[in-house]
Length: 562
Image (cartoon, rainbow, N blue to C red; front, side):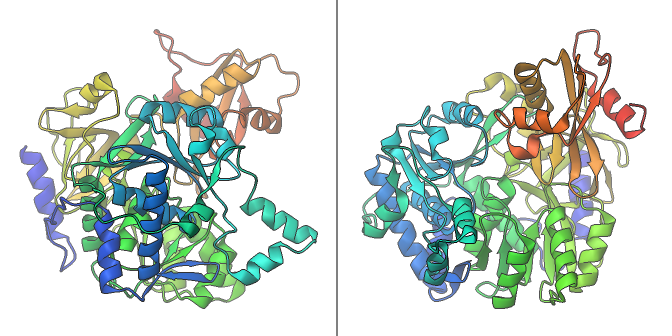
């Protein structure tokens, strides 16, 4: 344990002045984040959606009505509600409605294929869903239609935009198609139900810190899909860790681009929870669009931005091309994937402010480290362990053995933001933790004076534009849906998205066609997991026990040998 203290002690010496080494760990419901902001900053703008705004008082009111709607649908404390919708105001209202009831929110990618959603729902057992009406039909094999509450992304728009959407012209029709659709027969409109509802009764019980708050989805340490339950205390602790790390932001005086998907751990913690807890104003868009974000910035200047590297690159580029001043954005946090020196330099040149990297995973709510928001920041590293967070670097084959500074080993994590184990996966949990409650990250790192550097991932996980892609899932889809004899999938470095998915295939195909392969795989895979390149090989190297040698294939691909 000497090494863990050494890393922590070294890290604390580099903390920005004002950042504590320990944070208060909450024992209450996440609903108190919204309640506190509504009480202290009732008239401050909470959400800006294409110019339509809600104050914190109005946000709280919508959340209490959403709680009543969910309760009417049968949701009680301890139940799970499936969410499958993009970023939108209703996501906030439904999320805090569930938090008020003490129900857990299972976040799902709305664009995931039906079979993937079915597998996730089967693991958490939710019987009620709040879903975008365009994708709600994918849930009917798992959830009864009358328990699916549909969301219309056009419903919260300003009246002027709604009027334009009704025009009988092609542009209006195309815009409508992007925002709304028909829900499955028998489903109910969440928007209409909330409009008619009264706030949930005060006597209805809520949650404690130990109760389950959110369920996310991960590959764990072996690439097999798993569900990650996080408690109110897990997420609340990470909210405090993040807010203490950027303590210089004004509570009630910060405006942020709210562009990270809320079904992702990064977006869930920062946007749904942390920014709500600091009474920030969030510029909400259903999908990332640099021009729409900059249009909103001109209306409501942004001063804090949490995103993934491609977002920073695109916004800086479009701001330069459109001659828009983004120097109000003095603080930025990048996560989800490695931040290149080129993107960080371009961003700091455009804003005159700081950009730092953070690191984490779904199992840690998600953030465990970050560089200080000072000139001492180090680009290209995972940063310093957060307050109340312990890190160890150990021998991968013997995780009880700590390694000296500078040596490469597996990163172990312990802290209040770390989950207690996967849903219904006792064997996986036994392997994911070592004695003393240390979680095995699967990432190979080294330490340098308290700063942690990622050297390699022992997992085969591919991270593209901040999204996790599990090679085994892509390989299974290729072998199930095509005539390929064999397949291996790896990530290839790409400065625009971190890594791009490459499929290496053995098949008797006369004309290999990447676009045809992508269209075929859309049936089973989300868009971000589709291969960006296709390589044909006569034989794919495998180990003596038959496993594809992904590391060997990836090296050969990068070095141009295949």
